[in-house]
Image (tube, rainbow, N blue to C red; front, side):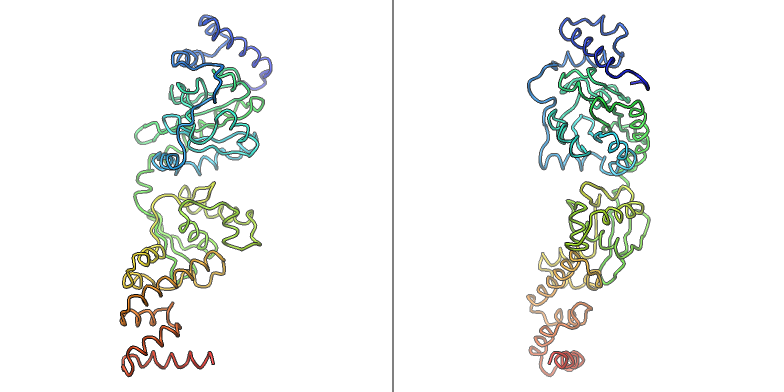
Length: 414
């Protein structure tokens, strides 16, 4: 739509052209100047595909669900681009009550984000994650048509084939790997027809170009894992690609919590994990915004999660504990997890890791491992374990220092 155009008049004209085209097959009328050529060509393709304007069912088939949707997202190569697209288009989507949508090259909707009211309206027309909006499945629409012609497209009101979409407008641009030119999907802004804006097409086109470099480096970006070291220190160290970052205490807590929840956490959940019942999601969002400046597309949102492979010292220890590998767990357990953190979620993880390593060592019944545990930062003051080892090896001169430490601990508790 051009700036200053009469929206109501344009809608009325398009409805008349639409009715004529799909009842009388008047191609000549469609190409008489009342209809843009890109739309006329799309209508003809939609008609050949058997798309019915007055379809009784949903506007698009729901092709993906549950685990299949998650797998398609991970395999898409688009996860790294989604946070950037949110940064570039999120404000426009919110202000205009539009949805931000990202699809794969087949037209499956992988991400559909926006305010609750617009999402509820969109559900009525099958505009939901997992639905298939290719041109052959849903008829003319910005997403399916941009994928079909491989360039940016805006579709307004009755330019859609499906009559149930005539109250909507959308603008989409294809997403390409800038290095290979491979079509990877599209990005779209969709909203009620009365919110149509002449700048929407330019915005999605610019955003698509902006993320091309991320898509091009996507395979290399995630080829190296994110490495987190958080044992025995209050300031975690994170290695991402060729960068080593020393995190603040709050960012250390957030990274550890997200690494421990690979499916992600909402702002509300993070607030509870960080501050307990008094936590405020707005404070968490501010911290996450600052953290995203450090991590870039490695930090996703809705829910918040870390993207790509992750290697963390505390996760490795937990894995060794689960395997019952006491020696390997103890070797990697260099100290408590973020030892001075008072965040409820971190305290729970720390206590669980301590108990897991300790229990694995005790179950091993190996005195040397028990001695190593007692000499570690986490097990140094473990009086019951001290007494157990001393009872097993009474009079052992190599345990003299541990015996004196046990006596001091006993004196403190009496």
